[in-house]
Length: 266
Image (cartoon, rainbow, N blue to C red; front, top):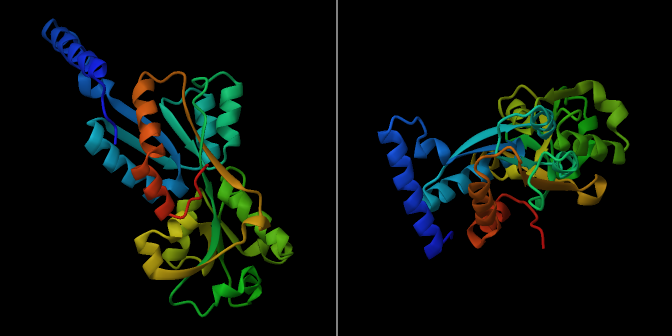
């Protein structure tokens, strides 16, 4: 739980009076706009981060604007100055590159989780996913959904896992690429694809958990999905961004992340 210190409370009260004075004198700054936190997050966080945001907003009174997408696309946008305060990537390498380029607040890089990938099929499927990735050789499997490996870390993990099992070359022509891991999951859930390799965090969400079954791909079969967050230097809400990260690191935030299958940092 975020607890404000007495000095912080005095600062907030002072800031409110200053804001009211500016409005009365014809100024255009509003307290609500100043407190909006803009977050760019990898799609594997879809359900977990939405829960985090609801809890954080209740406790802090701040509003969080969330954008979900692929880590690589967000990285490219942030290089060009996209107006996000906080960036959650499914590949810690992207925020590290932003840090090296001097685009982030020094010392704010946080390795928030390690992700996992699973083989998922709907309940209507005759496939036994517990047999592992070799079931993808089944001629009945016509379309296999994964995230685009060019800019989605979970897509790269899927390709690496298939290569580990020596089946990638056999089935690559049947792959259907989602723009991000959430879109890949939608392809299977909607029936557009027969099966897919998606994030464990999505497979454990109530809707998908009840609609199908999954098998966890061994972590050693692909490079680790180390995920990282960082605060952008251009942010005008750096203190609020720090508060959100602190909330995520706290007991309630960690419980939510664990519930969605993420391995947490030590």
